[in-house]
Image (cartoon, rainbow, N blue to C red; front, side):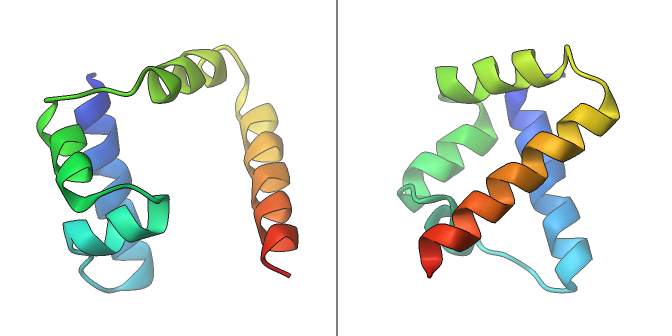
Length: 82
C-alpha cells in the first residue's frame, strides 16, 4: 500500500468518526501544511520522508505499543495547547 492510500484511508476514517466532510483546507490546517501540499500527498505527487519513516518504524511494533505511543503524542500535544 502506498503512502497516498494510507493518507486517504486516514482522511476518510476521520470523516466517518466525526460525521462530517473535511476539505483539503481543513485537513491541511489541522496537520499544518499548505492545502496544495496536502493535495499532493493524496495524489502521490510527493511523499514526505518523515511520514514514510514513521510508518516504517510503527510497522515493527505490536498494536499495544502503537496505541501507547500515539496516546503519548496526543497527551504531549494537549499539554502544548495549554
